[in-house]
Amino acid sequence: MRDVSDKAYYERRARSEIRKANTIDDPTAKRVHLALAANYLKQARSMDEALDVI
Image (cartoon, rainbow, N blue to C red; front, side):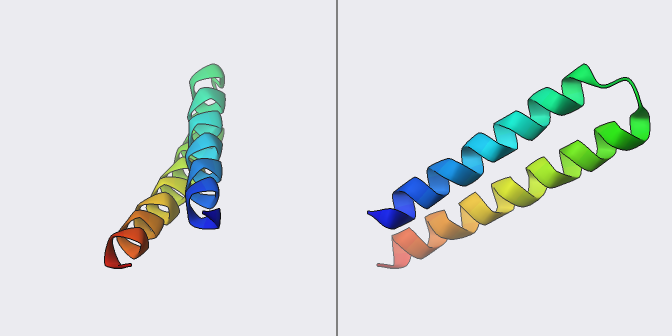
């Protein structure tokens, strides 16, 4: 089930970016990390949808 491990990878990366954003005081850097997290979560959701189709 490579798809499940790929999905887990994107979820882990998203959580990591959120943790980074929470430790940074610079608002611009915080937005960058949150945007990255959003992209990783979007990728994980799209993999979820692909798994539902199978």
